[in-house]
Each structure stands twice: as C-alpha cells, then as structure tokens.
Image (tube, helix red, strand yellow):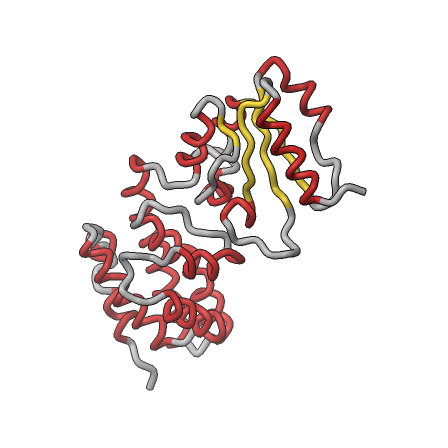
Length: 251
C-alpha cells in the first residue's frame, strides 16, 4: 500500500502537470506547519468546472490518512462563508499557502477565508465582548452563591468568546482548541500585553476551578486593551456590573 507521504508527493506532481488542475493545498496541521509524524494529510484539489465530476470520481479519499477534497474554484469560494453553516471552519484556511495556484485566485480565496472580514470586525468583537462579560459576570455570581458547578461552567463557557475577541482585534480567526498552544507559540497575540505562556496558564487555572483572581486579572487587562482599540462601549453597556464582577472578593 502506498505511503501517505508518497501519495501526497504524487498528487503534488500531478497538480503541477495537469492543466485541468488549477490549485492544490494542504489544510489541517500540515497546512500551517504544525504537523508531527502522526499527522494526517488534509488536502484540497481545485479543478476546472468541466472536469469536476470526473476528478471527484478519479481522486477522493483513496489512501488511509489522506483526506482529499476535490472542488471547483466556485465551490472553494462559497465554502465557509461568514454567514454559512460552515463559518466555524474558517480557521482551517489560516496561515495556509497554496502549493499550486495557476490562476492566482486560489491564494486570494484562502487568505480571505483565513481571516476576519474587515466589514464584520466591529460587530463581531462587540458581540464577543458582551458574551465574554456575561460569562464572567455569571461566574462571579456563582461564587456569591457558592455554586461550584456554575462557577466552572460559566467561566469555561466565557473562554471561547474571550479568544474570539482577542484574535479578532488583530483581524485573525481564533484557532481550534487543540491548535491554540501551537498558534500562540508560533504566532503570539500582539495587542494583549501578556506573553503566550501567561495567557495559557491563566486559561488552565480558569478551566480547572474558575479561579476568581485569575478571571478578574485577565478581565481587567482585556478591558484596557479593548478600550485602547476603541471598544469601550461594549464594557460601558454593563452599567457597573463589569466593575462589580472584576472587584468582587469572597468573604
């Protein structure tokens, strides 16, 4: 049976030589340079419209550990649009470079999908700040009620919104959870004045038991960053509840 690496190289050469193939690239960990020896090959082959059905039958998933999607340029363009059901998959395109791009359009589409649309940025960030602060507030309320389940669930639920907002401030898509450590190590956040290691340690403490002081320290830092970036109104809308949550101390 052919090795996944050999099949990848075979597909790459085929993509370069076949005039019906206009693009070829890897997503997943290999597309971002995060792979290890056990990583799968998640690949995309972009072909001309007139050969789409033929090439879907000809290629596809034929080798274990190689997952190949065959699509037209139009299908690639439509996939994971911001308002589509697959918008959650946009991070898959972040940091990806086309290995074959015969028209110059493939990389443009990849770059667009792997980032936050500028026209959506303000609305998205404000919504994520609001959701994050709601989780923080409810977590602190759970502290007041000595509700251990509420503390942990509410604080944990706030973290995806926090990450969405922090990455969106830089026009980036927040990574999938199992990519977060690698993303922050190789491409640290620039606007948060914490090193990646400190942020990850804080997230782990919050996930472990909803640590109140860690949540408050992080929230104060995040508020300062957001205000500097022009997103103070999202905090002002909490009418003091944010300050209460950030300053509350257990008896």
